[in-house]
Amino acid sequence: DLRRDLAVHSIRSTIVDVPTVRRHKLSNTSVTAQSYVIVELRLANGATGIGEAATLGGPRWSEESVEAIKANIDTYLAPALIGLPADRFGVAGARMDAAAKRNNAAKAAIETALFDAVGKTLGVPVALLLGGKVRDSVPVLWTLASGDPVQEIEEAECKLAARLHDTFKVKIGAQAPAADLARLRRLAAALGGRATLIVDANQAWDETTAARCLPQLAEIGIALVEQPVPAWNIAAMARLRARPGTPPLLADECVFDAHDMLAVANVAAADAVSLKLVKHAGLLGLKKVAAVAEAAGIALYGGCLLESSVGAAAHLQAFAGFRELAWGCEHFGPQILVGDLVEEPLRFADFQVHLPEGPGIGVRLDHAKLRRYARA
Ligand code: MUC
Ligand code: MG
Image 1 (cartoon, rainbow, N blue to C red):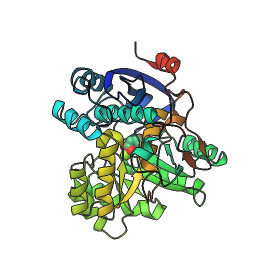
Image 2 (image 1 turned 90 degrees about the horizontal axis):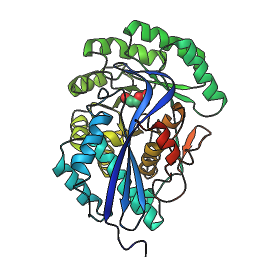
Image 3 (image 1 turned 30 degrees about the horizontal axis):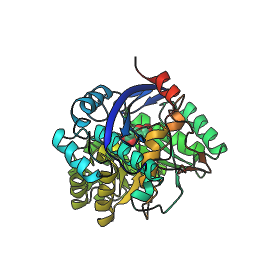
Image 4 (image 1 turned 90 degrees about the vertical axis):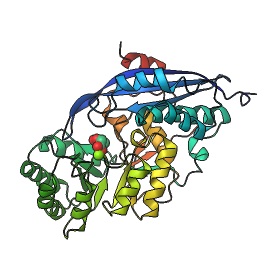
């Protein structure tokens, strides 16, 4: 009986670097390859589970780099779980928290692999283990981040024509606000009426700059503004949100755990929160943050860190279970890589990304691809 021995037998971590189809520019970093740590977890029954820890530009989007993630998994987190029955998700979380502070991306990759291995053993999708699905697909946006409006309009037109994406997130903050506003006016003039535009400043502005720019973003028709000010300054987010003319605000880097979410809710600093495994330390942590948001009337947005189909599939298993996912998701990651890491990549069609069928997270690692992109 395959089910009999769910004990964790071994955990292996591999750093991969997958080139992107074009340069991706954020306020504080710029990448031409995405670096992940892929976790492969084997149970005593022979079943395997996989998980992914995503990063963006080294330890710059958050404090975790792939090198640190791998070292902390191999040295501290994996040894804490060997022998534990893989279906004790809560115990695994407690053991990992005792073994290492924070390291949320590393913990999320391992927890994902536990869920995947248990789902694959039992023949059920992770969405079922998390409470059952409400939907089979999620609206998915595309991110424009080359910084060149001519290229960005062309890229958006291709996505619209292919019926892949009709909502676009524009990364701002790498240049002066006036230049970003001019760029956004060009994008809105070209795409207005046919596409929804949102922006992500990745903490680039101070409160004064944000107060000046936010009403202009509303006037351009920007539907949602992500993390305009530094993560620590939720008081500024709350003051900005209370000003007339401010568009809806999306909390990203200011919400890692449920305590952060509660603090944002207590001062009414956001209209929506971006949910990401790398921030919330796993699927259970993500659901916990979502529950606090829901209790405060803060809407859910399915966030990403440009994951491959491994990480994206894991997120979809959680997103599939939310009653309301008002802002859809942004798991375009698999489409910005020159190659994916799984046997059958996620399906994008009709402006949605589709929940993969099959047990566990619904995708299987392609070992040849893993070797191709593995760091020597
Ligand atoms: C972020 O801050 O939201 C997600 C999409 C993208 O382009 O950057 C990431 C991280
Ligand atoms: Mg963001």
